[in-house]
Image 1 (spheres, one colour):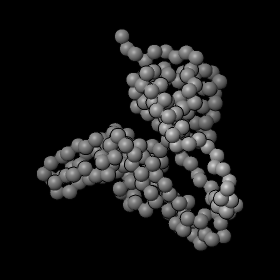
Image 2 (cartoon, one colour):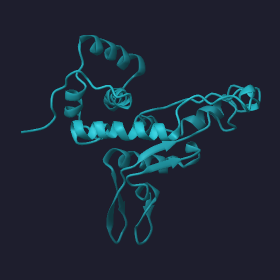
Image 3 (cartoon, rainbow, N blue to C red):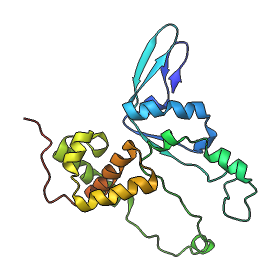
Length: 212
C-alpha cells in the first residue's frame, strides 16, 4: 500500500497504469487485502501519517491467483485439509473484494496425458495475435466513447449497452440467482461488451455518448 514515516508509494502505485499481480492471494493478511478495495474503486490511495497526508495514483489492473485450499490439492486424494481449514482459507477473501474482481476463473488440473504428449499441438492463438486483437479492441473503445470500457460511467454504459425486454428478463433472473450487487450488475454489462469488442462486433446502432 505504501507508507513509512516519510510516505512512499507502494506496489499498488508502482503498478499505476499497469498490472498488479498478487500470487497466493489468501496468504496476504486480510487487513492488507481490505485496503485494496478503495484504490480499486477510486484509482488512488491516501497514505495518512502524523506528519502529513499523501495521495498517490493507483489505477491498475488487478490479477490474482490462489489455491482452492491451503495444500492446493482440493478435490484429489492428496488433499489433507479439513472443511474448517478450507472455509477459513477461502473466507480470507471478503465478498466486497471479490465483488471488485470482474472475472473469476477456476482452473482445472492438467491431465497426465497432456503433460506426457510432447508432440501435441497447443490450441489457441499466438501471443502476437492476441496482442493485436487487444490493441484493436482498445482502439474501438477509444474511438466510440473516448475511454476504455472499464472507465465507463453508469450513464454511458446504459447508452452503449441498451437492454431490450428479453435481456432485461434474463438479467432479472441472473440478479436473483447469483445475488448480483449493483457493481456486479454493471460488470455483467462491461465484460460482454469487451468480449464483443475483442471479436470486432459492434452494436448495430447505439446512442452517441458525446455531449453537445
